[in-house]
Length: 570
Image 1 (cartoon, rainbow, N blue to C red):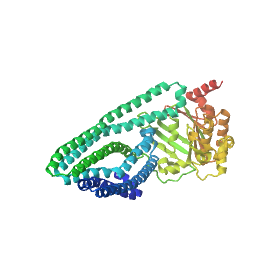
Image 2 (image 1 turned 180 degrees about the vertical axis):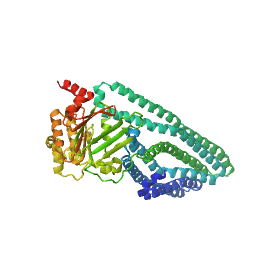
Image 3 (image 1 turned 120 degrees about the vertical axis):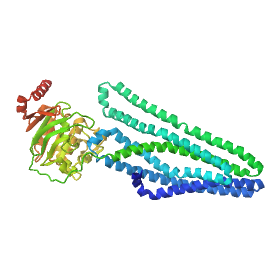
Image 4 (image 1 turned 60 degrees about the vertical axis):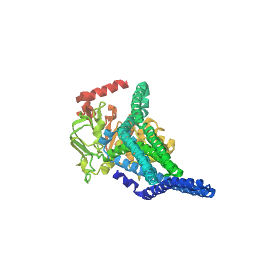
């Protein structure tokens, strides 16, 4: 809990004055039954209309002041809670960006989104309720008990006993519901995951006519969440009936005892009205507390999930302060092995290779052979489990991560564009890029023509770049990498949506760049024929390396790939 107080430090005024004004409103509410009792015992009993009207005016004034105090508190709660939520989300987002892919893979994108959005919302609502009601509701209960004891200690004890019983009921129910709320958040993660997968892979789902299976999978997850919600709902449903039962029983006992006391002259009619009003106030306060218990139970489960994320530390260190030696090989892997989190199977096993600076390297292999995994080790998206990965003379762990990644331009398999403009997307790796630099990058990626037709660098880009075709998105992501002037350019099957002519032209333009080491991962053997060296991967191992001609003669797997593609083209 203490760790989250820092996110409220800019809202100290609201956090102090909000509850204070709410306390004033509650104090006035506690005084109303006493004023009413005085009106009944003095004004009504004596038939003094003026006294009754004056008392009514006092009650109206108290109501107006209480209303103003409540408005101020509501405003303070809104400002503080919204600011708190914004600060927590910003801190959480920054923390997520420090995590390595190993931690991100383990947690899952759906869970991350839910924690940043839904869980922080729950915490934000709890902060608002703390400022608005946590002070008021207990104060009303305690104040009502004390004033009841002052009016008549015997009846005050009944009020006290009723309050304690209701508090016990709330505590028991809270203990029962906490595990269910925590489970509910995990089930919400699962629903978000399935929804995200189906939205991102909608075309694949429909192409394979798999909608019914996906609906069944979603229905099963939704049913699990429904069953869990029903269970917690059944437990929580006992709150109001039990609370009303205890309080109403208390009212009945008060009426029974107070009748005799009035007959004996110990209590007045006004005092009985005041005692019943205090019992009613306790009932209303307890109902508020019961709702707060439900809210805080959810918020506590959410806070634990957010805290778990904050407590997750990157398995990747920040790196050292080594300087790049551009006379050394562009990169080297020595006996490198790697496995993803949660699996014992190696994706790469004892991989050794050496790539001279300025050369063009091709990597080919079947699906799941480890091609993408290999190049992911260069910018330290992942760290090798065994062996060493060196870039320009030093182990990648010896460089500052930011400096290392600024040196390596990566074009992933999936062409990821972000909402904004063409310019804002191209400037990701080089915020100070001039129009001339951006246009040069577009020309090299063969994207200048369609960008000019669509409206130039300030052409809007919708979410995911949906207003561009697949091939156009790939060329824009290539241009984005080139605009950063990388020393190592990784093209991870990034021309798969291009026709052969455009693919060849893009590769020729890239080959003409100076001081750039190019790594081309492709399923097309024809795209790699002019590479200085080609590495063939199978099951995470290098099974062949050499030029196209050398591999065609000496590597059965490479020859099989080339022949199968040649037959397909025919």
